[in-house]
Amino acid sequence: MIAEFLPGNDIALLENGAQFFPALESAIAAAACEVQIETYIFADDATGQRIVGALGAAARRGIAVRVLVDGFGASKFATGLGRKLVEAGVQFETYRPKISPLGLQRQRLRRLHRKLAVIDGSIAFVGGINIIDDVNNDHGPEMGPRCDYAVLVTGPLVARIHASMQQLWRLVGWARLQHRPPVIPPTACARELPAGAIAAAFVVRDNLRNRRAIEDAYLEAIAAARSEVLIASAYFLPGLRFRHALRAAAGRGVAITVLLQGQVEYPLLHYATQALYRQLLADGVRIHEYRAGFLHAKVAVIDGHWATVGSSNIDPFSLLLAREANVVVRDAGFASRLRASLQQAMTVSAGEIGLAHLQGMSLPARALRWIAYGVVQLMLGITRYGGNYYRE
Image (cartoon, rainbow, N blue to C red; front, side):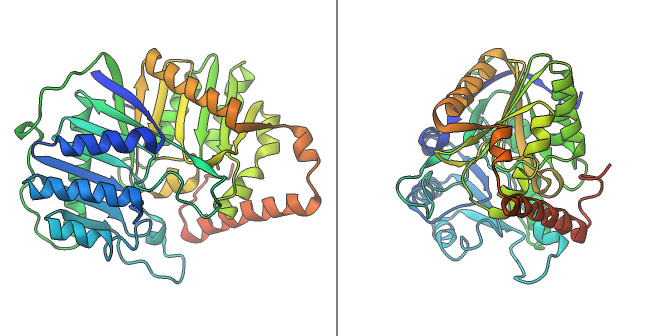
């Protein structure tokens, strides 16, 4: 078994920022002694300012507050909202802050892509939602909010999440040769909170011992699937192991459905993904594209009892390069809620892609997609991270 499941948790599904941010603000406001947050993007918009206000208020009342952001995704944070946090007494750090505008240095692609928060060692948030307005985009008011998910966790799994965040905080401090104040143990301020009966695991991807942990958790679940695999991934460029697993599952009668990005947010990744459509369809995979807004979800449900919510896409950047974090849940009730949400999104806000759509595509359009796919492969080859991801 790839993931180590712990029993006795309560896992609440949070859909989009409309549910996530009020829950996060409420938890910060109720904090007794500690708040710790990691995020890839921390935008200077209405949502970002609200969260900064909540964190600053917590720090001013004596709460130990630590915020870690990525140096690429939140490149302007240190000179903007980050200053307000420091002035309020928040401890703030940037993961890999120095980004060269030139070249494809290997370390440039190794980003902090996790979205985590732990309050008082008792409550954790894990998911794919950055600290940014749901409708923060340049595509006009007709574009709907992002489709995204997070979970609110209570129970023994919180200690695993907290320990992972503490370890990374220390690593960033050591890398900058800075002394860090003593870390407050979770038990020093943990409150008695109700837990439940859900078995769940916390799975991370890093560049040390857990290089393939999230992908392996997916592959293990897909290999055991007997009826259905439903995946929603904003960026979907699976390697050969993943595609072979989907093909094998479809071959034994498992219904395979993927919900993918229908809007063009990052053209290179968008068109590279579409280069795989014909083969995916031939392998028995049904494809739906989300079109009401940007799809940012990174979730899956398998056989109605296994589910995952987190920050990891099914692409080489998440599975081979970035620091990622997912919660994997074994519970029919939770899986049912997530599956119902995804089915609703596919019914109301997505369209299915079939062979007729691909056959109607012009030759230049097809060429564009294969060129994009080739560029992604070339980038991985230059950085020597790709290995056999796309090769037999």
